[in-house]
Image 1 (cartoon, rainbow, N blue to C red):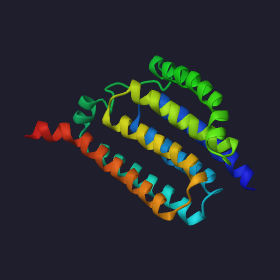
Image 2 (image 1 turned 120 degrees about the vertical axis):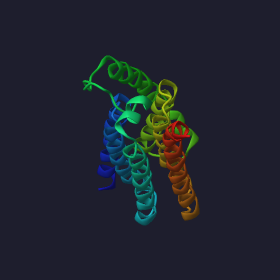
Image 3 (image 1 turned 180 degrees about the vertical axis):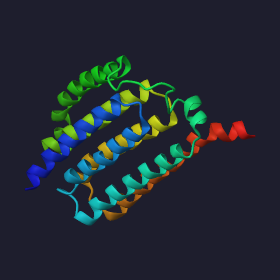
Image 4 (image 1 turned 90 degrees about the vertical axis):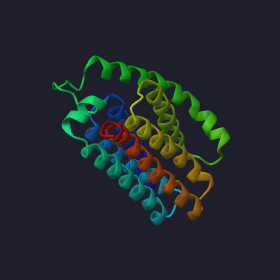
Length: 205
């Protein structure tokens, strides 16, 4: 049963990574991030107790909610000015999205080639865990280099942290470490919310 959960978690992570990479809609991005945390739980629960694994899911969903409330608090005009909304309806498969997906695909191939190195560096890590971790870290690094909006930067950092946690959960199962990583998730979300609001506060002043 755990093997099927790991495969399901890997599939969810791959699909949501593609959605986050291609999307320019913050609502869709947060939805994909929420589903991605569910995929992470399927993988992490194989090496951690369910209660500890659930803490990752809860902290991730709270982080997504914080970012979502920050963006929902922007007025329509502020969303346009900050680049979080388009004045005209855009197709999901526009050229920018296709370009990002192509880059992500090439980076994904590099990540697959790194899986054996992951398994050598972290004894006992399984293929699904190492592949998910490598994909999340590598593709998020590319996203961080392509997009500079605070929201997207925080999303990329949250995904990198999740990828690290998938690999690290094989080595360390301490409740304290899991709690600290959850606090980092929430801290990143709060910083992201502040950075999203800060241009509007300067405008008010």
